[in-house]
Length: 367
Image (cartoon, rainbow, N blue to C red; front, side, top):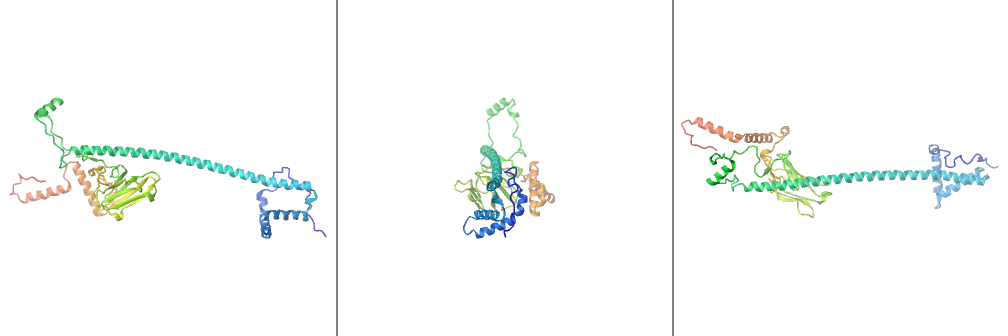
């Protein structure tokens, strides 16, 4: 007795050969069953092509259990139509993936171009900044040399003597009588010490290769290095009184003595980005302001240093007292008044004079 067969004489092809009779979400319900069959076929393939074996098995099923092959021409068209439907899906997906890949590539190219443009702009800005800094440092050095030439060996301003005839010529040139030429003005308390520059907002300054800031305890130095420099290329040696810094294989950018000694065990450096290295120097003495990082570089006028009052509360008692004393003495100097030490000496002398009215101090000169 022949087993009942499934009739396939209903329409074998959809109206549109490329239209799926079942969408993927519906067809996926059969995936577990088909996957189980595929695994069993693969297990029995024994080196043969498992896909060919599975197709042969499926068409054998249609031959044995259905009347699929009763209309050979129509069967062939049905098989080709099914193949074309699946192939069209694969082609659509391939084109979709290519379009997505093209979009991603275009987006990546645009991102890379924008990044390159930003880097070019940043490099130009760094070059301009470095050029301006080096020009300022060069001018500072020229000003320092000129100021040095105007000082005597003991560091005081040189006094140029003139003859009476020269004094008369000066008077004629200015329209004043030689006797009316005013004496030199007193030193301006707000003027910078000759050969120095004004501190930046971080109480530091700048040099050819770097800028720096400071507190009473630390000095932070930002050194410009060639773009793309890695941490392995940096060479930095801290000694208590000397610094050597540079890029391996090149002449050191800094090789000089510190302004004052540092605590080498607390000094370190980090690569802030591919163009800047940050040095953190721990001062050995936390009771003085540095006028420069290393000897020979431009110096700031430490009388113009202005600690942030808002940070005084963060200091310990001794350090805070020292800073407040320095700030008080600085204000007193700017106003032409005695510093705390000078005032203490004056008070002590005043008490001594009051205690000894019998002594004559009229010819005494106090310093």
